[in-house]
Length: 420
Length: 81
Ligand SMILES: Cc1cc2nc3c(=O)[nH]c(=O)nc-3n(C[C@H](O)[C@H](O)[C@H](O)COP(=O)(O)OP(=O)(O)OC[C@H]3O[C@@H](n4cnc5c(N)ncnc54)[C@H](O)[C@@H]3O)c2cc1C
Image 1 (cartoon, rainbow over the protein chains, first blue to last red):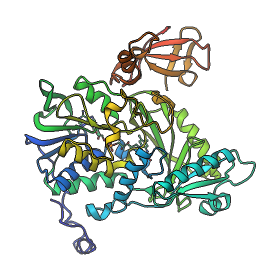
Image 2 (image 1 turned 60 degrees about the vertical axis):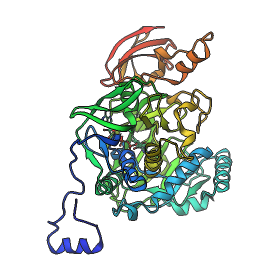
Image 3 (image 1 turned 90 degrees about the vertical axis):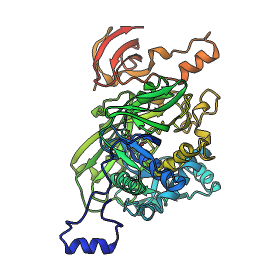
């Protein structure tokens, strides 16, 4: 199991030996059911779920079943923004729970997830924007979540490269910053959880696609996979953009539609933007990765797709807006763009709860914002899968809320995923 | 990017069109509450072909029924609604 505990000493020892002693960080798991719990999907959320099942609940017979390689889905495609400054109290509680876990995660996992609380800044472009940001900031502070409303000059000091001209395409009037927010290294999150879960005995089974469910009446008793049938006491779906497809294998229809979201990155340059910049008036956000590339994104493609490729027009929109905010970006070469399939729920909030089938649970509907929730989502889902009961923080996010009129609609957009 | 053959205007770029909903999820005024709830909130969301309702918003304004593969993006048929 890897090279034991990682430490400064193990690095030093590695240096002396030419770094040849590093072993695999987790075993290549083989199916050896029956399991107490099977988690379908080896993204950040699925791996975190498995880790907390073993760590918090002492459940060791756990398998993560991944159709490709771990972290190859949205975990490895997202723009890594971590924050908790949402509007709806239920989302504030959920994401603040997660943000607190981010702050100790590298120690918890003995793996550097490169969490970098460099601040997450929302820009205001008008008096109306500033009033809205002030209102949001007050609501956050009342919840005990940090929020600083800052003026034009403070924004200019934070990011000196902003076009602060009064005649700028999008004049900047101020902003709202969450200083405890920031970014993390996406792959490291998957790998860190995988290694820590493996150390606790979890089987991580890659190249194994779930193709159906084992059933006894209304009870799900395991999964059919490309590597054979595997039995389990409880089964948890955790497949992000494929939630609709996998739930469909069990005959369920969800309040979820799969849409494309794209992102882009420039060539690496010296530090030029040291905070996360977002504008909800525009549809554009960007930050600088530790490697130096400016990573950004914008709107989704607005229609259902599982294709993992998007239309250039959406990239053009967000890049044009980014350049209007920071004109110096126009001098950089774009090196790559890519797309992920996001599970757009019908109120914009995630679903963590039981399904109409016994023994089958769902964690999905994270839309374009689930990376920030990775440790919290995993821990709360583990609680559900271990006990059969929802943790109070996760309880409002059950599947039944749609039929019962308890939607948690941050954007106030109604059941139209293409409108958020 | 999709090239959508509008029955009225001919082939036009996707950007002129707006996706509305899957064709099996239209809510009718006289639907029973449970039928309306299902139409509002549950989707087959197939990783394959589905019929969808689109509108040629930046063109002729015609509502369309598009049958389209959500994996390959191939458009099988477009009919006026
Ligand atoms: C371009 C882009 C930018 C984003 N930016 C941000 C951001 O800045 N901040 C933020 O908080 N969120 C962001 N998100 C959203 C975030 O990435 C997702 O909400 C989150 O990663 C989803 O959870 P996950 O990590 O478990 O998903 P994934 O990593 O997608 O994991 C799901 C796994 O399930 C596997 N799977 C699917 N079907 C099967 C099957 N049948 N059998 C076995 N395995 C299967 C997949 O292969 C995949 O590995 C972004 C998303 C995209 C696409």
